[in-house]
Image 1 (cartoon, one colour):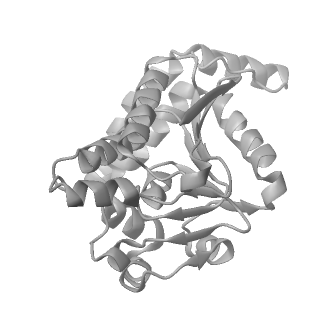
Image 2 (cartoon, rainbow, N blue to C red):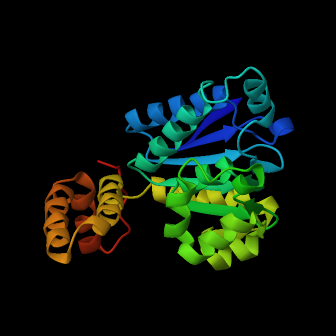
Image 3 (tube, rainbow, N blue to C red):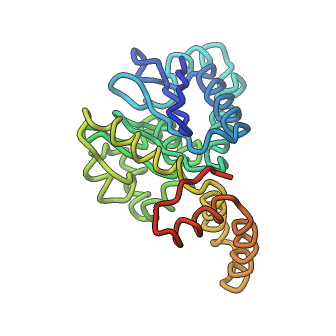
Length: 258
């Protein structure tokens, strides 16, 4: 159901339910969260990439499991919401670069899962839809938090209220995805992009990620103090020493993530 591979310092998690368009059943949600938690504890993992097998990235909640729970009167107790929310939070909180490789359509909670990552690289044939309102629900799994921040409040309302499908090109223009690539080149190019981040100065990237997120809660003076504190930590790392030595020697640095 979940494939895990290491490509150097990059860990790739592949949702492997192609016949179900990689729908998020509770078991897959739990496997994903466990894999993310394990990656977070492994300092040899310096970036995380999430993708899907087959023609879809993720179709959202598993409607068959959903219907079974509804029929059994367990819709609010079968654990899907808790597991999905915990997973999106776990990915969002991951302290190293995260990349969603969107090999196909990302719908509903599948799109929210992608939005919890730092970057979204999409196949040129991929399509995207919020989809919740078509099922009579408001967005869940962080959609109402991620979308306004990524594409702006008005575009988010339009996307959510209409339930429209956006093409990869429109998603790129709106700021929903970072890059688009031909489908047959997506994994190769996504892997290169993700490995570049995985081979970067991991501690500095984590600090930058944290600082940018926290900037919305501070004024400039407080942010400058936080940057100074982060700089003191970064300055003591092996990567900072390597970067300075490389600059003096006029060569490219080789970062170890330490």
